[in-house]
Image (cartoon, rainbow, N blue to C red; front, side, top):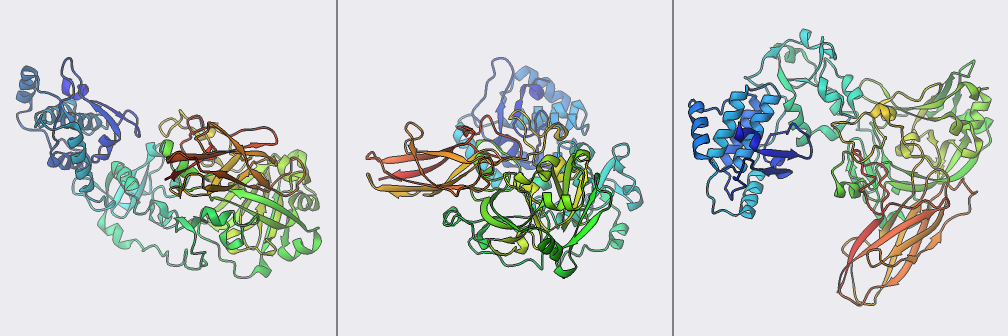
Length: 617
């Protein structure tokens, strides 16, 4: 048992049970050899060993066990064979198989013994070995999920459809594969969405949540959950998924966008263009779509329904009704995605989500009517309402709409300026931003500002949608996917203090003494204004106050961002320097220096000091 448990593996991503489908597990892990007096030898790893190891994991068998395994165990104890990465690899592999009930302990131990015998070439240096590891990684075969597998049982469709709850285990299919996702759902933020495919194929959903398609990490996790094959006769009867028109009607977008996801479309403008104007042009306003755009065929028939607790008679209002019956208001309000600057948090530690940089934020004038006026028109009784839910016309494969909610006190308070808007920067609101009607909730995270809104529901409880319950929540930095419980966290509403440098960009070169012009934005949620923006050119040792460009808005109702600018000389000393910005809001909130204390597994509301590295030469 020494080789098996002496090979110590600390896996950063999968906790105590490593994912062993190739070398990526070992490169991201701490590998060492255990056992008194043995230590970590310098070694060389043979590529075929890992090809065989992957095969063993994929098949879930003990195929690598040599026939004379008992003799090898005896020899091992007498010879004290040095441990190396090969031993650690197969040792942890054997442990993983044992923990997954795919191999008896004898096979697992023997895998470790064989690994120790393959540790050779002590003259190789550790750095040379790591180069070889990289070479092997590049040659890893592409994972192709859903292909028929002879080593697994076959299931009929009539049996698969029975597996839709924990009691019977939750199964889904993908092409020819059958997967048991019961245990996986508990730690997955989209678990309730996966449940919609219980007993069925996940393929139709992947055409909407396209981030999964082609993702080798997703595929490898899937194949770990593989339990069987769909009977070929049932595959013949299955109709192909028609997804040709899901995204076909979507508009052309600005060519300058950095696209983070094509389907659904999610993109941000270049930082320089973002701050070029105080009001972000409609064509450059960042786009965050969770689902395919809805088809709005006839705006004259469009209605928004208002119903729920506290309303005796539900009402429906056409767009023309909103424009004619209610006082029109215009506000300037910034919208920021909860994932803005996720790429910076990812540099500290891996997170899940789209790789937004600094431009998942934009500022616009919004014209429409106050939600408080509409609720008063509907004779809604606030004392009976806990939350106000918004549903959009964008739906997933099974017709479920995007939905989010805000607290009733926010919705009913006219001073919170919650709006049903139909114009953006004086123009008809573009389809990407909610045409014909969207909700603007100033000072609140973008996820609650529902686009294409056609239902407003007053409720005692908050929205039970996936996006309210299992997403857009933040946790402490010790919470990861193995121990997260989304039910114990509050949905993000107001956004914290944020700022970023948009000019210059990373890598710019200056001459000693040359003027460096720094520009950027700052914004704080909840109506808090920006009091000050400080900038450093020496990594935070000394600070300079930037000039602010902001509009006059009432105190605690400052919904618009602040643009800032400062001109400073480049230092005389040559070399790389770090430019930093940090803001202070009117409540004297300050930004954290780094991501260490605010890291969260979804990479949300990252607002640590932003820095840009430039060179003086």
